[in-house]
Length: 227
Ligand SMILES: CC(C)(COP(=O)(O)OP(=O)(O)OC[C@H]1O[C@@H](n2cnc3c(N)ncnc32)[C@H](O)[C@@H]1OP(=O)(O)O)[C@@H](O)C(=O)NCCC(=O)NCCS
Image (cartoon, rainbow, N blue to C red; front, side):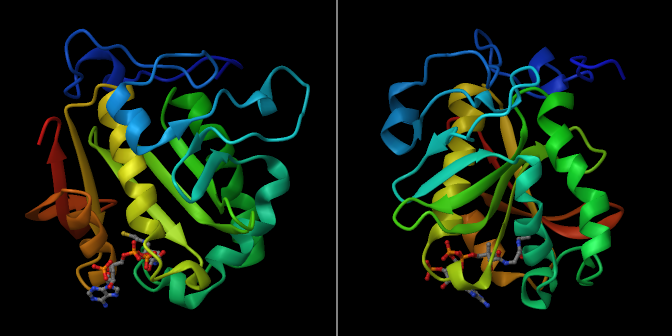
């Protein structure tokens, strides 16, 4: 694929429930954030990290009360190596296997590429605003090969139990509805992942039973715009 070209984006073309009158917003173009979205979380500007070949200090793309979210840059790879090597973190992800350093190094470029393939969607690095410490990531992206858009998150155990997952997931929900104009957002979890299911409920999602995503039968949660 030629540099700068993105794939077809049904979430921006009306095939995936885009609200009439709203268009998608590009992270690299300043845009208006609705009052409601501003109340809940604060977009803090574009990320200049990838502008041309100039690499500058990554800046937060979105802030919540306690979290900074920004795009990943190549230098962040060790954060993901650490996250995906922890068996507590990976227990309910795919087959529950941790990723070796080599596996993460091979997978990491996909995270970097995602927002360039699917404008407005992506996986954002999360850090605490008080200490600056990396805590994990939040995502708003297609659920596997489906046309459904899902909220995802993966946090280091040190950051569990503090409400960070709920705070970040709520920001993803608000971004998806208020800025992208999505009509529906889902969340899928391993049936045993009660903490994650609780997070999805806390951000207003409804249990829709079972769904098939990532070639796996998973618990499906969803929220409609305006719910
Ligand atoms: C799932 C995960 C993101 C939750 O993070 P977190 O920061 O602890 O989440 P929060 O603190 O915002 O909320 C968790 C809620 O679940 C509850 N909870 C925790 N463990 C639970 C369990 N085993 N059963 C039921 N509820 C549980 C917590 O009490 C809390 O609810 P409360 O605020 O009403 O008390 C975190 O455990 C994680 O990153 N796990 C590894 C990766 C992962 O599984 N990602 C999700 C893939 S679908």
